[in-house]
Image 1 (cartoon, one colour):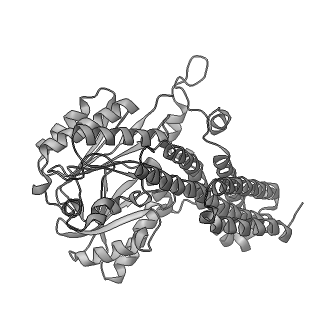
Image 2 (cartoon, rainbow, N blue to C red; image 1 turned 90 degrees about the vertical axis):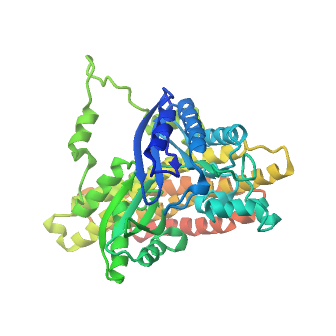
Image 3 (cartoon, helix red, strand yellow; image 1 turned 45 degrees about the vertical axis):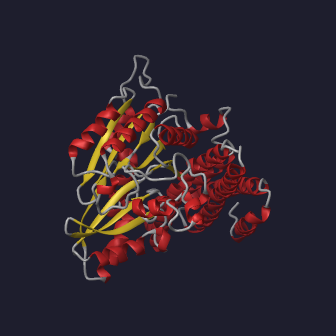
Length: 512
């Protein structure tokens, strides 16, 4: 399958459209890519471009864009509400069709080395491409912004800080183009909520409450800003399946009410997956039994033009089962376990749906409605874990390819391997937790739900138990590969407790 990769570079310029025009022209000069979106914010003084194409084309287009931006944007003259580090501030790559996270990591590494050597621009690798665990988070790299990092690299804050801030590629000094942060990540949604106040302190308080780093919602990064005379909560949603937009909006709405304000409007920066908008619409309209096949355009698209023999004229991607059977390392047992758990959750949701609305089960309808909602959330989490497990393994394999010629490189490589191994164990551990929850819901459905679907309830239970077994194998193999196994001791203890509870759960109610 032809690889399709997305790139979403952010440039520190929006008030001079002629500059952005030249950067866009540089991207479009590569025939193998297509520009998908251009979004500029004057208050942020920042432009986000989105383009996609082949791996080779996207990599070349990104280099030409970074080069053009470095020639036209002077960070010493730049001001704006949004934090920034360079003319091209960040440049992430996202795997789409036929591409893996490992492919995007390799692109980030090659591009970073080329930008550093040919353009003499310092480059930091972040997210899945990070060479140090603390650099996975963009905020850690960009702390202090252009001025702060420039000062730290100069040695003004001491040799230790200068060494800590040393880039992965390029010179350890910042010129007028600043530094560029290049990485590989999953799709995110840039989403801003404007409040009915100009008090930026309220936006900052709400941002602190909503973002994960300060105890808020998982997969949410946020800042409080003053934009166009209105307080704004500016966010990146890094996993819309586990933390949906609707949940974020309602969280902000409740927090805003504490300060006597409301939501004025919200906005997207760049593109958004259709699934995220559908999920929000379903949540707000309370379409509990909604099926995505009910979307007219989806049905039309799925039916597609038919060939003369009745089959689709458009090549279809391989099914998950076909991908499992392929002689490739991913997807593997961990992804299969998550898939089994998702099927178990799907069966639970089905049984709950078959119980709701039946007079015979009126006394348990409220409970079944709650079970259906929880099961659907678990199904989405476990479905996401199918890809997350494969991606974590690909990231782990990529760390073994890091350079190890010097002692510093060896230490960096070893640290990255440990971090990637722990992450590869954490994902199946989370699958184990979700699987146990599905088992509990399945037993409730078997006991109280539609009796005609009791076999479906127990099938859901069996799929979830299989998911826990498969996930447990993957937790253990990753922890056992560590030289210092004590780093994963807590994970193994948690897994043992989950397995013990799973073994005891079926004894509570066994209909067969």
